[in-house]
Length: 181
Length: 181
Image (tube, rainbow over all chains, first blue to last red; front, top):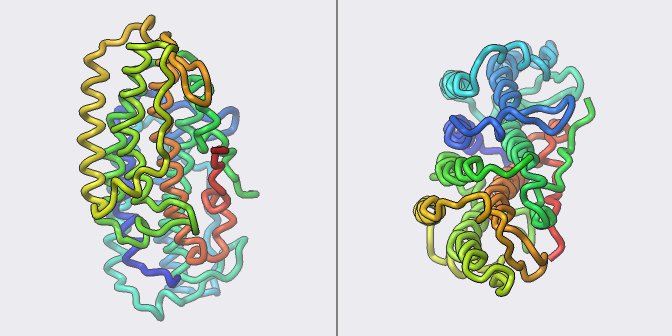
C-alpha cells in the first residue's frame, strides 16, 4: 500500500491531544514509574517525543530537500530528554509537544510536497539511503511505537494488582521489542 | 505495590477522551484495517470495549458484592462486537464508549468501596477465585492492553511505508502476545 501523506498528517495532528487526554493530571503512579533500571517512564517518553520534534523529523526533511543523499542526517540523541525535561512538569511537556507538533505540521503543509518530492532520497547515518516518504511515514509510526510503549509502561505498574488476569492481558507479556542500538 | 482504586478510576475516566482525540474522523486506513484474517481493526477494538462496559466490569463487580464466590461470573463474549457494532460508525462507537464508561464510573463511585469491600472474593469461570480489587485493576489494565493493540494495529498499516526504519520501531516487532483462549 502506497504511503498517503494526508493519512500521516491526520495521525500526527491528533497525537498531542490524545496524549493530553490520557496523561494530564493522571496520578504519578502511572506517569513517573518505569519498567526498571535504564527504562523510561511516561514522562521520559513525552520528553523524547519533544526532542524528536525539535531535532529529528522536520530538520531531516529539510536535509533531504536541500542536500539529498550528499549530507547524512545528524544522528538522533535518544537520551536527550533527561537534560531537556529537567525541572519541567508533565503538563509542561504536553504543552510543548502540542505547540512543537503544530508548528512542525504547519511547516510541513506549507512545503506542499508532490509525489516527486516524496520520492527524493536522503542518507541516514546507519540505515543508508531512505526516501522523504519513508521519513514522514516513520514520523507517524514513531508516535505509535511510543503510544505502544506508554500503554506497556503503565500496564507494568499493575502487573501484580491484576492478579490471575495477567495471562489474559497481552500487554503484560510485552517485553518491548527494543531495537538494537 | 497495593492497588489504589483512585488511580484506576483516574485512568478509566480518561480513556474515552483519549481514544476520541486519537481516532475520531481519522482516515479509514488507520481504523478499518486489521492485521490479517481473524484479527481486529481499531473499529472492532472499540466495539469490544463497549461490550465490556455493558456486560463485563460492573456486572461482575455486582456479582462479587451480591454473591461472593458462590456464583461464577458470566463468561465474557470476546466476539460480541461484530454483532453489536453492525451498521454503526466509529464516531457512534466512541460516543457510546464515553457514555457507557461515564455511567459505569458513576455507579462505581456511588458504591463508595472500602478496603474490606475490595478484598471480597468472587469466582471467575476459568481463573478461579479473584478479588474485587483485582477485577477493578484489570478493568484499567484492559484499557491499556487495547491501547497497546490499537497502536500496534495502526502501525501494521505502515509496515512497508517506513522502509528500513522498521527495525527501530518496537511496535513493528510486536506479534500481539495473544492469550490462549
